Length: 27
Image 1 (cartoon, one colour):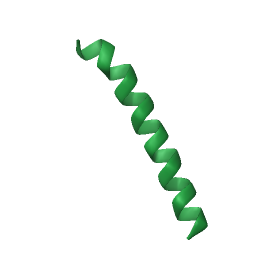
Image 2 (cartoon, rainbow, N blue to C red):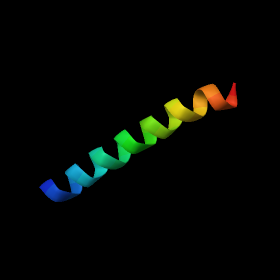
Image 3 (tube, rainbow, N blue to C red):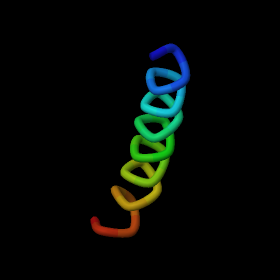
Image 4 (cartoon, helix red, strand yellow):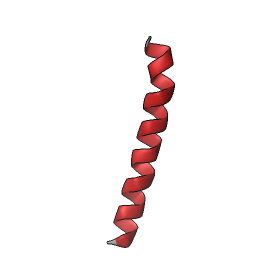
């Protein structure tokens, strides 16, 4: 369970990082 949460957090961080990078590109 702890491993799943860790992976989920990493995915969320990556998603946020990509969104942040996409925000300026999209604008």
